[in-house]
Length: 279
Image (cartoon, rainbow, N blue to C red; front, side, top):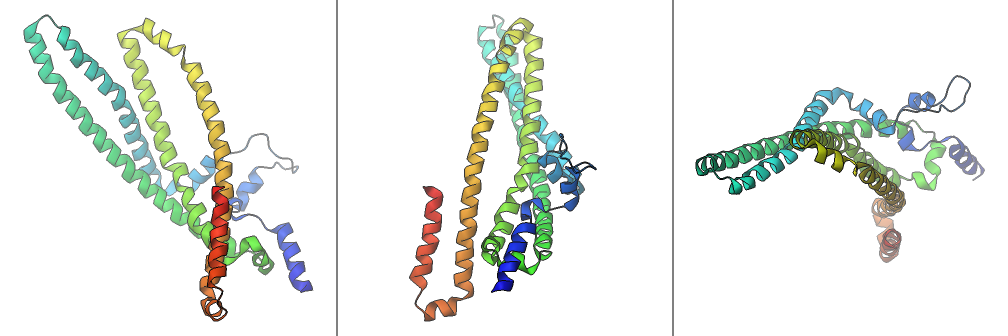
């Protein structure tokens, strides 16, 4: 008993969470030679992107396709506006000619948009899948490197670790795939919209740009709200780990559970764990 307590104390003092133990060099990079914490640190997204480097061609292809996809939205708006403007065209021959051209152009733009959407989904799905497999391998290697006392802690039981491998690692898939796609799509859409606006009416474009700071402020506030929601999600993830550990313990020892008639007890404990996540 004394040995177990000693191991638990030692493990709690020296063990590092699996999420932050992907690479020991990254932890050291946050500190200078004097042991002081650096003012500037590499963003977490770039650290994760480093592990996705072998699939760089899929990421580039997906980013280009996302940029084109974002550019098609303002182009479609311009084409629709030009087509509706033909109702005010006094020249009937020109009106008939343009009315035939614009629908074909809109259809072609829609086809290009669909192809880009398909390329974006396939590219980021491939890169995200490879990242998930690689991170699971590294996480499992980090788990197996821990000393025996680390596994005696309640939060490091087999069920919790398995849940962490399946859920936490899969969540990293969106850091490089969906996030990069959204950023590239937004950049492509904004640049195209600004160019179209200045080509048609630069005075109106400047007037609209005056409201951009308000949109940025709204985005910052929304980001802060999402960050708080992410903290709540983290608490729910901890409860899911406890629930997974409870289910894993019951299934691994199913003969003992049935022999002692403790099925309802484990079901009630499992249900209570997930009830806390929705309170």
